[in-house]
Image (cartoon, rainbow, N blue to C red; front, side, top):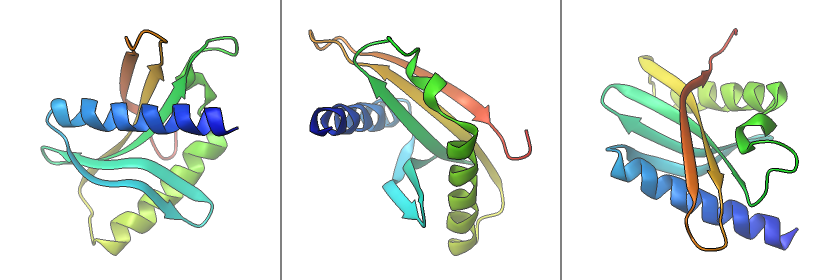
Length: 121
């Protein structure tokens, strides 16, 4: 399990750097509410973006983004609603997924899916 946690942490660091390089401003990492955690909360232009990062070192069980379940989406949406209420934010927002395949040679592959899901879909 420690190895999986290390891979996950490496992926989140890589995703955060990727987002910064793409012009996003990171507001929070690993923001928690109740049973939910949002890996990265960031902002770009006039959008607040809630990001789920999925990192894998193999594809035996499919691509990383495929492991984001409806339950995880609901938990993220609930946490996002609380976060937005706390900061009194009621403008544009979206939920993204960043998939990272970690390679032993350090050549990580990243896929950024914007608007991956939305409340009520």
